[in-house]
Image (cartoon, rainbow, N blue to C red):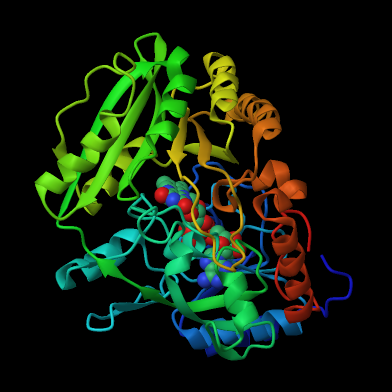
Length: 456
Ligand SMILES: Cc1cc2nc3c(=O)[nH]c(=O)nc-3n(C[C@H](O)[C@H](O)[C@H](O)COP(=O)(O)OP(=O)(O)OC[C@H]3O[C@@H](n4cnc5c(N)ncnc54)[C@H](O)[C@@H]3O)c2cc1C
């Protein structure tokens, strides 16, 4: 509890919710425990408890809650749809502002523009755009919140052909800052805030209440295929993919999956095209350039699409106990060797590493600045609380070693619980310094919680 904080008069808190369109619960309320439990997608229970949780129903609720919190020196944390693996919006003390109910989407098809509130999900956006023949590089899980995803950058569906990082498709935002004012930010208005919102991650020092998104024509033919090889050939496979230099409209991922008592590397490729012939040509352009005999013959191309991708991701990442960590790297062979050495000792057989080919995206001037041709993420997942510590230790040891071959890390799947003190790894040094300076300027009194869990 902040010693400088004015004591909160019980009457004050009784009056505060009367001004809200939504609801608020204090720690003493009978419903608080349920609200706290359901806030996180991750099935683990985080022992960090805000004093108040506000479920906003309007933009006015956001401004009103920030004002109430500031007057009582309650640092604000923000929840989009609660998919942060680290539950980073759950902080001790303070006020948790839950935006999940603000999920309106307006599409201007002629301008190829979607105005999206922060509680909207990947699936909601895809469903709103498809009737207009439009699409957006959302996250791969259908229920994933767009706001946390976009603020951290976003490795979205067909991301290589669509800007490299989803946040680079954000045209403008509406936000509310520490002083409670509603601002519109884009490349010309409040450009520093716009710069920060494109990849700055959690703890920006303001709340985004609307994203204006540039949308893309929906590819009419999306197909997938996959092929496997032994885990001992993972490094060879990654290097062969690099040499093949996949087309931008081909999304290439390698998962390490169980195979009987052992593990295999499973390559999957998604082609985003307009005709079956184009899609086939995209697949062929990869497989024809991989060494003969490296993979089992690829499966027949299967029709896919946004909904199929969401379902596949949801089947792989069901809500249970999780930790995730990742690196970005140009040293795929060494990363593969480290993974292969650690994986047999993983405490849970359900734990999956995923390696996504990024290539060298052109990074515009924005907070997102992490470099590395491969994204190497691991989703440790298990069921029993008693296994928490073993999984934490295993994942930490793996990524302590992988850090030696990393060129960066991706903030949205970075283990903020374990590595808050290393969060600058997710940004180029100059971008990190600029983010910290901006944060000092726009939130000098610490009205919002910091990105680092455990710090203000
Ligand atoms: C099943 C699953 C699939 C995923 N798939 C992908 C994927 O394909 N690609 C990818 O890049 N990532 C993916 N992720 C990671 C995902 O991008 C992050 O978990 C992201 O934070 C989710 O957004 P959210 O709105 O649910 O975030 P939340 O957990 O609600 O919030 C995370 C943090 O973001 C900040 N924040 C959120 N909304 C706002 C706002 N409106 N204003 C200010 N700050 C805000 C807050 O600091 C908050 O603590 C996936 C995660 C899961 C669990």
